[in-house]
Structures are given as C-alpha cells and as structure tokens.
Length: 199
Length: 199
Image (cartoon, rainbow over all chains, first blue to last red; front, side, top):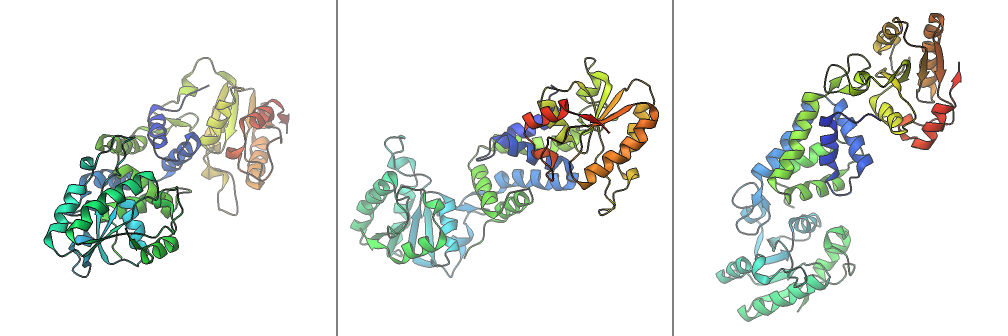
C-alpha cells in the first residue's frame, strides 16, 4: 500500500490538529486544496500568518485587537459606565451579536479553578480592578459560564467589586446550566442580559 | 455591533471557502488558532505553501507526486501488466487502502461529459493509450464512478483498448449506484475489485 507524498501527509497531519477535524475530513480538505489554484492556497496560508502577526490582546480589555486598543474600547459611542466580564473573546463576540449591549468588556482569559490550578492572579482580575478605579464605571456585568468555575469566579469578583460602590450583576440564569457559554444561542443570551440580577 | 479585527475576518473568510466549512465552524477554527502558539500556526501555514510547491502530477499516471514519477510508478514490486483507471487521485488512494490491488494506476483527471463540455481530448486518455503501446499491459481495470459520465467514459475507453488485444474490465457494480466512488467503503471497493467483469 503506497503512502501519500510527504507534503500531502504533512498537511493532513496539521489539519487533524484542528478541533473536530479527523482523518477523513483532513484528507478531503487537503485533496480540495490540491485542486485549488496556487493563489487561493496562498491566501489561506498568508491569512494564518497574518492572524498571529497582527492580532494581539487589547491593552485595556484583552479582547482580540489589531491595535493597542480594540475597536470596542476605541468607540466613543459605547457606554463607559458598564463593563461586561467574560472569560474568553469568543463569548464577547457572541454577546456583541445579540445587538443588545453597548457597554465595554473585560476578558479574563480564564476562570478561577483550583482543580486546574488557575488562581485569581493568573487571570486579568487585577487589570479589571484598575479599570474600576477611575470612577466612571457604575456596573460590572458578569457573563461567565454557568458552571462551577464561572460561579466561583463571579462570586470572587462580586466580593471585590461591591466594596467600591459599583454594582455587580450577573446575566440571568436563562442560559442552559452546565454548558459552555459559547454554545448558547443569541436569543437566550440576549434575554439573559436583560434579566441580569444583583449578586 | 463591533466587527472582528480585519486579520481575523480575513482568516474566517478564507476558511469558509473550504468544503463543508460554514461561518460557525470557520469562527471556531479561527478562535482555536488564535489560542495556539505561533509555531503551530506557522506549521499549518507552511504545509499549505509546501503542498502547492512540492506536489505535482506524476508524469506517467497523473497521481499526486513529489518527484517526476509517483511512488507507485517507481515501485518495482507493482504488477506492470495491470493498469487501474480512475478519474481523480482520491479514488486511487481509496483503492490503495483496500490493500487488494498491486498493479499501476492511471488518473484521467475528469470523466467525459458532453453536458459539462468535457471531451475525450480534455482528459488523460491519449497518455493512457501511449502507455498501452509498450505491450507490457495485459488488462485495464476501469474504476470509474457508477454514474452516467463514468459509464460513458468506461465504454469509450473499452472501445479503444480492446482492439489492442488488451482486456478492459470494470470493477463490479457492487459499489452503490448513483454516488461518487470516493464515498464507497473499503470493503465494498475491495469486493468490487475482485468481482470485476469483462466489458
């Protein structure tokens, strides 16, 4: 039984590292790419390099950004009295798509988890507390995964935020319990935002 | 509603061009890649460039190859009295995986199709006929899609091959009718190879 040429095997091997891409899918993608004009494959290849070269965390909120500050932090129309805290950028973008939120964000990078050895100092909590020093923020909305780690992180943050005279709320538990926030549909997320309650 | 940074949008746009990858999957893959070390993303990017730079058609059988001749055409253990004709390389690799075939191959590149304006001279038929001149080939196995275009191409080839005193066979119609050969399972393909009949 002959083996694929090395360059083809190599691409299949790299594609299989991606989430939900197995051997068969990787092969189909590789065969498809072999049939594409060189220009098309080059565009994909370049966009991968550019992704890592150009995108970095916003220095204010840790959202994905091409500049020092992300488009949201730079936008003068955003309500600067509101900060919505999420664990990762995909959740921020999911909330953006609900079109129901016009405040700022803060991306923690992870959730507090003694089991996985993630301590409060390992995530962007200190930077959040610094943003709250200015006196402009009136409310911090905690939009964290409705799971143990999300609840623990929300509780930890609420205890640090409330003494500053800033209200800490969390999105309503309309989001399905026990699943990653990233998989919630936009309507559920939108309702959860509206129904947020003080903690 | 904020937009993704341009470099992120661009990668999502490129990923969506791939078969069976929609907006959501492209976003998930892009977010995943953003979280990977630069080295990992570079490996994927490079393997794409390398694919197009290194792989070309074998000058004998038109299989994917890194050299002038593919590994199969170069292998002295292959039975040179047998040529199996397929339309595209993925089908060749599928047949290889059955482990039941040890002859050579010939990749046509397409199937004759008046509807899609594919004429016999548009595919590698002339090159196949040249390979049959040497007198070494005793049998040509036609492993073409069991659909109108595959049947038409098989008939066309059989009429050109038989006058040379070379037998033309086709793989048994054990393969499910009306579907692309690429989707057949290996056992079905293996049986179809064994049960090939003269046409």
